[in-house]
Image (cartoon, rainbow, N blue to C red):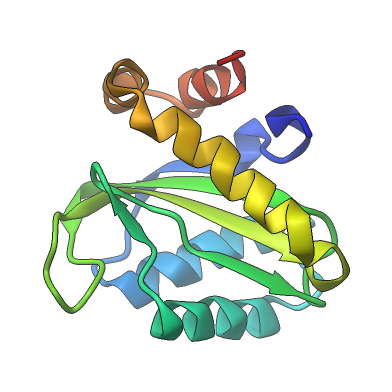
Amino acid sequence: MDIRDLIKPEHINLNLQGATKDEVIREMVHLLDENGVLLDRQAFYHEIIQREKQHHTGIGFGIAIPHGKSSAVRTPSIACGKTASGMNWDEEGNEPVQWIFMIAVPENQAGNEHLKILQMLAARFIDSAFREQLANSRSAAEVFQLLTQPN
């Protein structure tokens, strides 16, 4: 699997406006929907919210990876968003989240595909140099280039 098959520059929004986790999730779902990834925006939104209720998706480093597998997803995809300032992502009030990477996977491909994508992203986020480059990115094109360069 190649990350270039999952994310496109138009899947990246470095100016998320939401002030709450729910608002940001709605913006990210809308981003995927307006780029033809989803068959049913509301159904996928509910899948993401249900997943968040089961287990928070903040992973540290100011990053959250909400994800959902649903029949409402047309093709496996990743959306990337950045808030102007960090926001509380879970009830525990752990480290604020500024970067959100939303994974959408069709239900019929959910098994290994979902885990492979999570592993691919997590491997990048462990690298402090990568996180620094991400933090210094000023455009969707820069983020796209950073995400799609070989590890």
